Amino acid sequence: MIYNYLAIFTAFGVSYLIRVLPLTLIRKPIKNRFIRSFLYYVPYVTLAVMTFPAIVQATQSPIAGIIALVIGIILSFFGAGLFPVACVCCAVVFIAELFL
Amino acid sequence: MKNGKVFLEGLRDGVPIGLGYFAVAFSLGIVARNAGLTPIQGFIASFFNLASAGEYALFTSMQAAASFLEIAIITLVVNARYLLMSCALAQRFDPATPMIHRFFVGFGITDEIFGITIARPGTIQPVYNYGAILIAATLWSLGTSMGIIAGNFLPARVVSALSVALYGMFLAIIIPPARKNLVIAIAVAVSFLCSWVCGIIPYVKELSSGTRTIILTVVIASIVAIIKPIEDTETDGPSTSSGTTGTPDGGTL
Image (cartoon, rainbow over all chains, first blue to last red; front, side):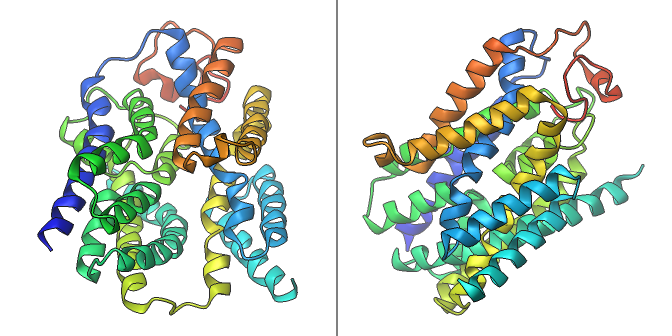
């Protein structure tokens, strides 16, 4: 029991420092053009890396995941918001897996 | 002034995140149960750690009775990307925002909350994050507890469908800017491709997905930043909220 709590809060301590140190130590705008460009692209790259192929592997049937990916891209392209796209992707997988 | 409205927007945008989290947390709860966590411990672990890969690493380490040093190191590696996200968010904080908000906004940095935060124009409005964190963290922690309690309570089909909510949301974050900006579009396509390839080629595929994410992010974002640096701007402060800076997409970062 004690071990479990100590383990949980060890992990918390490390992840909290990772999350808060840059936010609290970097108070001024970064001037370096490379760093600013790098930070500008990071979120798109990270999210893209985490989305594919994970979306195809998250579903029971890979084909359902691929269909959700394609429909999600199309909907987002035409400006649908976060919640609609998320819901439609879920629905697509649920329906697709009824048939696959 | 409009804090209430902004908080509600945060709650609203936290819903799809929370739904996706719930499904992931549920399956994570099964891992936690195998590691001998009680539902309350699972709730606490998830509430404070707020990291799927990080907690997966934590629970499997606990099951193996790992030392606290080992747990600290694996958490550092698996969650290292939050360091990058925190740096990016630091750039979007209004210097006039009280310091205390940095401690609380930092607490709730996850991939998804980071994503919706940077998708908003202008400087960070902490109450928006608090709304999103409240709903997302609650569902995340509850999902973990319920996974521990109920095991296979949800049909696999439902878990399967809910698990893509997260990815649908990611797409809704990255595709609209990619449509407006060719460089982002290419970066996204290259990221998809590299991520897929790295999951296939020998040795590299043995790395945890968290490690692959770190490496790919650093490498791809660096290369794109070298080839296509964003426009230099005279003033790079809070004034960016005007949306007229040189950055290709005024609404993002």
